[in-house]
Amino acid sequence: MDFTIPAELEAIRSRIAAFVETEIMPHEADPAAYDSHGNIVEPLLHELREKARERGLWCLQLKPESGGGGLGKMGMAVSYETMNRSIFGPVVFNSAAPDDGNMMVLEALGTPEQKERWLKPIVGGKVRSAFAMTEPAPGGGSDPGMMLTRAVRDGDEWVVSGRKWFITGAEAAEHFLLLARTSDDKRRGHTCFLFHRDQPGWRILRRIPIMGPEEHGGHCELEFDGLRIPNENILLEEGRGLKVVQTRLGPARLTHCMRWLGLAKRCVEIGSDYAARREGFGIKLADRESVQLMLGDLAMQIEIGRMLVMKAAWEIDRGGYAQKEVSMAKIHVANLLHTAADRAIQINGARGYSRDTPLEWIYRYARQARLVDGADEVHQMVLNRHLNEQGTDFWRWDVAGEAGNAS
Image (cartoon, rainbow, N blue to C red; front, top):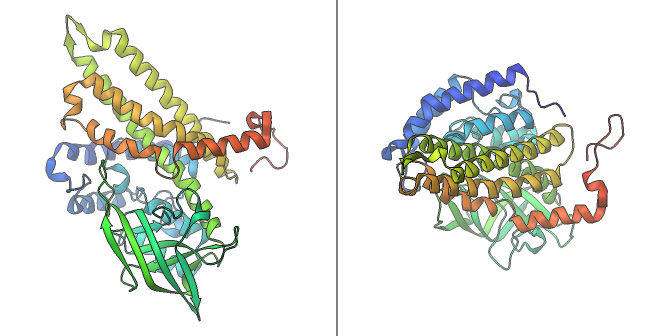
């Protein structure tokens, strides 16, 4: 694997870094830049998004024909990490969840008509979107086989009933991707539908309060009671909902990791800066061995995370699913983010616990990382399954020229 990046990608990364430094980060210290849920306020977001678009830094993850910058997953890894040096970064570049994953799956699986109607407005920043899959117990969570929300055919339409919850961005979304059971077939029993916010037959029951800052639109509980969706708004085809989930969630988990690495690096940056300036008992914090151990270990763990993310991105770019690679990255980087925020707060002392830095924001946000898109334990089970199937081949090196390497 070649770890050099093209000069063109470095130019993009450099432009993103400069934009984050000069245009976004200065707003983090302004209380007026935050909405009531801890995210960037809409007027400021609109202003920054226009600047990002003017500078050619908009939707870099999509193909040019979709209105994007044409970056592959490896290019996204480099760019997303740089974007999330700021807590506001990804959403400014239209690279934040859940729109990020929704746009990529619509680009990959949508018909030309569906891309025009459902994808194009999200790419343009005119609407937001949500992916409605997770259900309250005893419904489906990490196990889609437990899904209770059903869609029943009625002529050329489907009638949906059921409940979903922790649907990210739902309160602000106009375009929804909805996974529902359409038969009891274990492999072909789920279908993904597209619907608009203004369609009758569903409602938001509540915006669920959470401990951390939120994406725009929060995390909501939804109820479906007679929502009618025409057959033409099925994504991919009837019974292929799990294929849609696979197409969306693998890359989406990885893009979370890309962004989290940027936040982890920001934690080290804040911790290192304070340690270099703060003196106590006649010695700077940076000269204390305990602090050096904290920061040195974080530097190593971040680099391990970058290698795991880049390996998974490389596997996807060459046509593989990268299931075990994504799971390893997800576990490591999710835990790393929490550790990085915790140690940076410890080094900063009361300053880190205050809102004088974004560390407390990152700390509250970080705890969800071990839960979203599959809890740690689910990904550990995935890795154990691969280990049982592959044995010592779990760690095999791919050999140039061998067939079936991308898997």
